[in-house]
Length: 296
Image 1 (cartoon, rainbow, N blue to C red):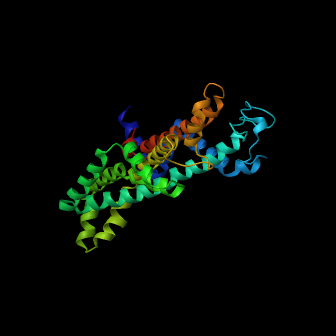
Image 2: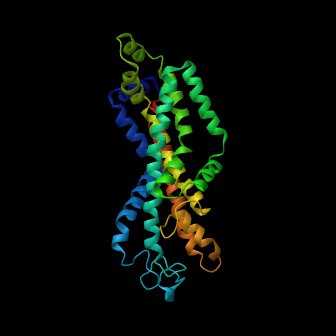
Image 3: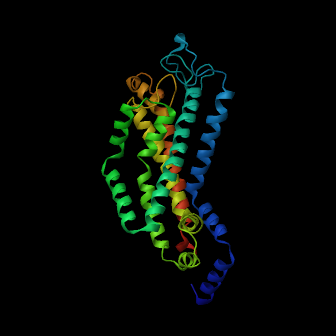
């Protein structure tokens, strides 16, 4: 590239708003766009779909057990009790995706609080908080999750809180590192010199400038939460029948893999699609919010 072209590129980058540049970079990430479309489609299907299907998720029809797809209006077939698999899959999507989003909100909020506090105050507060984070990370999340789930009555609320309690540590580390890098910037020092209280500096100065990594971490946390709910429900400690989730649908289908494989294939595909889609969106957001890509 010639020097004139490089200068023109720099000038063009300066005249375009950072939000517009980030949006253009995100739109160039095809997998992220696919992820957004898949997530929107899954959410809409889970919310609206059960109202459009003329079958009840709890209606048992013993005469039509294990009907293969498609069969007499049952597009995805029926399960071991003759219930329509598609409507149960969509109702399970409501549960699994709700747990994913709610666990993301709780874990991101708590992890952000810990990270901002540790990164801003530093010293003994940072050491104590980050050593607590390190201690929590020493335990494998899935085993900690199963231990908590085994002693707590399973419900959507308790499973959400348990997953959030085992998912906030990565967010805290990301936020702490970002805040610590911003801590000595001129605008932070200027705010402190004019007497701004610590709460104001954290909420109005540091947090908005660390929002990029937080958004990326939150997106990836949804994928992690959906997968962890599937783990717990598959092992029988999560959402209990008759309520359906993708994880307990897999748990119920495992003994019929040979005779009725569609009972496991469809929930497995939904888990795979949702986790992959959120990861794609997270990768796209990471690239879009990376200011170092402005001049590329």
